[in-house]
Image 1 (cartoon, one colour):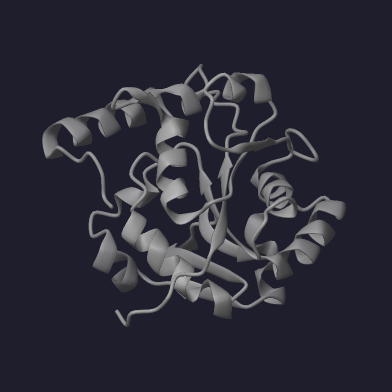
Image 2 (image 1 turned 90 degrees about the horizontal axis):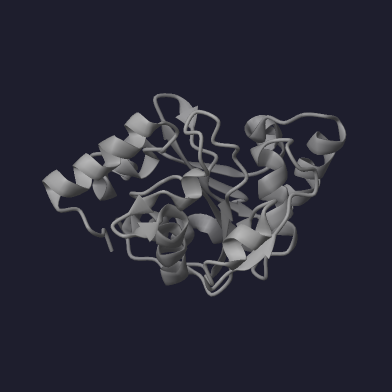
Length: 210
């Protein structure tokens, strides 16, 4: 990959899921002795001086004393698009790296590579098997107005505004150059997912991917 300068980005972590399948807030599941959300904050803080957690339960997250700003959804309970929009509206930088709180294996080299492309596009997003990964993407401020129009129309599908902006898809070969096992996209949605993450950590000794 050619060496390029990383764009300064804000970081948004979506912590608004209801975790129905787990029966507990997955953001607080322990991973290597720390809550999953704290691990995610730690990762994004390497790339950003402006990390935001979007949550409708700020008191729970304030108790963790994380170096973040806490922001609520403008339309609580209306899905991830609202969360992205709410975080981006208060972001200090023109580009915002958005991730979900339940991704324990975020790969810093891959995220850093994505930020090197952000200045030239409105969306930089991995694409695997013909499917975008909208909760592992960089969005520019040009996305805010199209997002607002979708939300006003009752549309909740994140990628519905993509035809209106400049999108740079990160293809599978680019992903594999940094994350050949594609663990970046492992979400903890169920107890089995969490147990699998623990097993990966135990067997591979995968403590960080800086």
